[in-house]
Image (cartoon, rainbow, N blue to C red; front, side):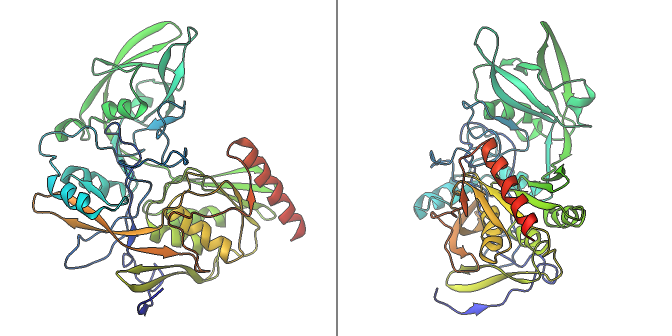
Length: 420
């Protein structure tokens, strides 16, 4: 790559000084909520924050990447969606015109560029802290005994307004604010729950009326939306030899959460780092996650209009526990950056299916009408110099998506532990 190399200090020493990869959601059918992330970078021509991204643009969904974003990207597949899962361009309220940004993005001809209204971008900023406004319901497509299409509650977030009202996983969601939802894509159902039609109807304290069904009984509930925190890093011990750390996307503090999870891994246990379906997010958080498993060194390089820069891990990470990274076609952007770093540095065996291939760098620009355009300025590469954009990453052991992939990953991890 041409240009002048510029050293970028590790994240702790210079937090917020790194450009990001853009998130332009696959969800193009409704206004679900926000799931974009971004890193910070100061520049006279740019907004204070640059975006780290998760997924393909809404104008060009990738049919070969069924797991290409947060849950809910395939409303007809039976998979689900929650209120923190993504943003779409289909439902905008008053004051949401984005002609300025959309015109600039259209002229760019770049499939990764994206246009946001001022309100959408404000919501995007909120998700940098891993927060969203909603009632705590995840939904999925299902069928009833008569093989009719229904919308089911897939999960209820503990402590959320829905949980306090007694909503349970498995309940049928029949209507939202009087609109029947059985025939709607799950993303549009989430849009209704989220209240994306106008700014006034989506803030904390706003209400949404839901009609539910359970065991032949039907009833209605009025739920008050609240500011909820996403849990994007979870850890569980699958066996004495296997600890699974699941990262659903990289938001603020995700890196530190991974550090804590790694520190709590029992002696003698290997780490199964599950990045399946992770659409990316904050790149500096991905670098921080790499620091949990590396003792310093290069994580990735990237260019900004020809100027080359680098991301480094901090010293002191766990280099003893065996690691297997589990990936699929929905492993994207910052998640690919982390995967490539651990693979190139020989720190982990990568198992699963080919990753998506999103490795471009975008910078946001505020337009005169308040809208925001994110335009590509460069691309990133793994420590070994591999380009991720379009090419994606090939696993060390290719296994089709599904439960077989996790089983194979656990087998590989057991072998690594036995040989260590």
